Length: 142
Image (cartoon, rainbow, N blue to C red; front, side):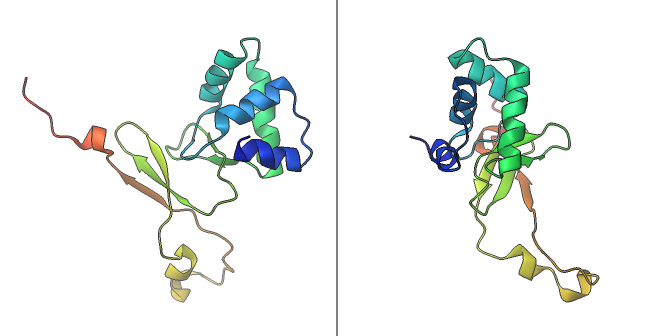
């Protein structure tokens, strides 16, 4: 059983076949799918699943705190099942690939007191950007 499914069962989330397939599609490391991608993958496993059902399940998973909504490109929301493990994101500026990363520093501690403007910090979201190996390869002459 996957980590996400185990967590959902532990919370008593009613596991219909539609909810199960959405959770199965989302489970894993480095998963950052849009709702449309979740629907397409879920429909491969359960052809009758509707887009509305996928959106409803995603909304419930976010409300439960089991999946996080992430926006890395300023447009499409992506759904990250690693909501319980502290991490940041590394995004390819070329193809949009998103990877979870675990920097050694503490971004909360890195913000100087003079830049906090009296705020009590509760969290930080850092997005690293660059080119993945596939996009960063130099062009080859044919």
